[in-house]
Image (cartoon, rainbow, N blue to C red):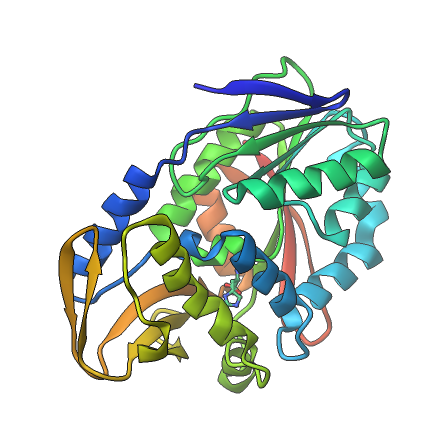
Length: 323
Ligand code: AVI
């Protein structure tokens, strides 16, 4: 299933084929649904990953800095719970200072970053391998919204790190299935350190997804450009606008691309009609209470060990053990 390529002495790249066929299939399925939708994972080409990095630095987007401050404040306790050395997987690209804190505190033998965006993954794996020459980096290009695997490194202590509340981008059933996969990967006694955004005042939430500089809008629209580039599609980005609203009933921010005028879009020779005001649902970002998240993780085979929240209770980090 994997072609393994030695990049340099301590970097290996493991690739799971993410084919255009599967992108096409998912795009057609999404655009044929009554409420048109496109999977959030298609945000993340090189440009999308860069735009997301810019989002994490926005004043309105409290999540990244709050999670980082929590990690910095509690890194010693976290390291003592996770245990030094062993194998550390990260769901996400590993370009941030968060993983550096953990790598320095845990000094794992092997670090396994996983990401769907190949270029971003390789660039950040190279940077980390340069900065930590003692570390073996096994970068895995995988779509973790589907079934995936990483190479078997044999017995040892396995921990996974899933920062940034990316778990919130999965509907609860999928989030549970993903956590179940992680619990199988880390094995009995293995751990998961995960960042989870909390329920809070709607104004704070909506501001975080409607930033004044329009970076989130550009990120949302970039999905259409990415699809145009990958498929034979002709989305006109000027005919859509960004929309992000909190859905209280579902406890989630919903991002949509709203069509500003009636028109047609062709994707691989299939024509889709858009009415003015109609939207494409591009992302959900679920918000949890601490107990709500622990309940979900419990259903996936994890038991809570410890969690940390900031004073304003904006964000939480949980350390869980696979039962
Ligand atoms: C990656 N994920 C956790 C982000 C979020 O907040 O749901 C993606 C994002 N979408 C808009 N802004 C950030």
